[in-house]
Length: 183
Ligand SMILES: O=P(O)(O)OC[C@H]1O[C@H](OP(=O)(O)OP(=O)(O)O)[C@H](O)[C@@H]1O
Ligand SMILES: Nc1nc2[nH]cnc2c(=O)[nH]1
Image 1: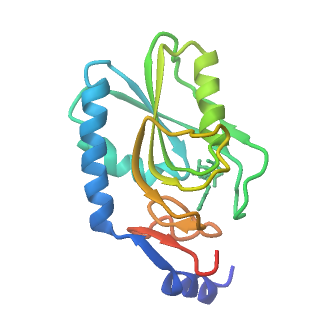
Image 2: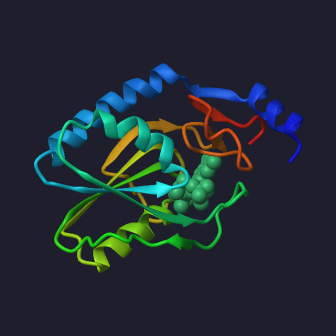
């Protein structure tokens, strides 16, 4: 990978939400989630890799007992278009009868979250809630009008990086939501 190109992508990107806007969204999400499932003894699944930054920032804001785990389903890899979903790690923790919260960075077309929710339902979860940091505005959702139960920010239909989202494997660490110039 050409690091000059990677640096140029960051320098030329459009900032759609800065770190302060992300913090504000996280505070609101934490409040909404606490109200909804604060008494439910949930198990929280982080969707690797993209969900890791979002989860790392959100979980310490949730002031109630919860268990954490992870799963890995991917359909983009290093590409900017989604393909068939691959399970790299199915949930290892039993979910039967449990309230489950799934945390991911983005709901784009929604195929990833749809498959994850289906998998958890099939394994007997009592209730499955989803939370995403960003939802992309377009009409290509897996189901018309599809939304997560909790959404941090609604953003333009661009190719995004930052806060867990990568550009060719890089810039998950960028502290806001950025759109690649021209994409
Ligand atoms: O709503 P969709 O169109 O299905 O896309 C959303 C998914 O795409 C990204 O994952 P990716 O496949 O890039 O895997 P990664 O997080 O491991 O990079 C992101 O983290 C979501 O999980
Ligand atoms: N990095 C990144 N991953 C995605 N997965 C689905 N949409 C996106 C996006 O805009 N950026």
